[in-house]
Image 1 (cartoon, rainbow, N blue to C red):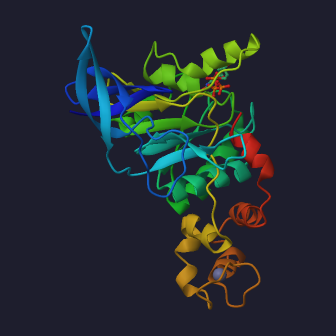
Image 2: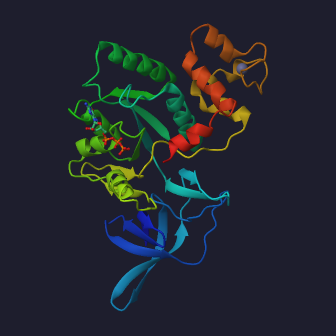
Length: 314
Ligand SMILES: Nc1nc2c(ncn2[C@@H]2O[C@H](COP(=O)(O)OP(=O)(O)OP(=O)(O)O)[C@@H](O)[C@H]2O)c(=O)[nH]1
Ligand SMILES: [Zn+2]
């Protein structure tokens, strides 16, 4: 049988078949996944093959194969083993919720998020939330940011999870796809989830309640089937992605507007900093590239990312 992993709690995996039946499955033997050292061989979103086994009237599944992943996101383990933890696989798109204030979302955060998503091969859509409470000036800022990111090719929507403004547009984009919501704490991820699917309880809340009681909890992602034919992966405590290791020469490739110009730089290994006849710097001078984007790029190049690492994950 073949199915998709909806939930994993350590050694057991909830796998749903195409006919919509859930099986509790375990892994047979050991899996090795090319290229990554992972603490967990199978993650939410994985497509797996399994055999059924019945013992004492209880039927469970034994997973014996994992299908190739289209993409996956990881977080580095907190210990020093350099192992990674795969959070989720086969994600179609991520909605990054952005608020101008309450809390503020800075372009440096947005850009680092986008670079990482590009590196993972995941489409990002920017949702500017809480537009119901913004004054004219703040709305102008939303428009300005939306203009910058649309020009690069990112879809941008102004929404209000509270009033329901443009939620239909978000649902439309989600239909038939596997999505995730990300963004700083307090931007409205849970509120949005509830606006698109009333009654859906995301774990983010549960986890923070447990936190207050001083309990240490390991967080696991979970996939939900929504009523309008969409899938949502909930990853408790997620603000962004874990960091992808990349070389200096690679960073510019994940800024789509830089990447397009790269072929016009004099040097084909140009990193757009001090090189002469650099098409990216020329475009910056011509206001074709936003200064905030170039600044974020330099920050990433210079490795000013330590605080982002902790910022991205609770
Ligand atoms: N005015 C207004 N308030 C909103 C909107 N969306 C969310 N909020 C409020 O913002 C606060 C935070 O919203 P949450 O949905 O809990 O934010 P979250 O991103 O899930 O936060 P974490 O669980 O900490 O990651 C709540 O008080 C919401 O009522 C909105 O569109 N407009
Ligand atoms: Zn260049």
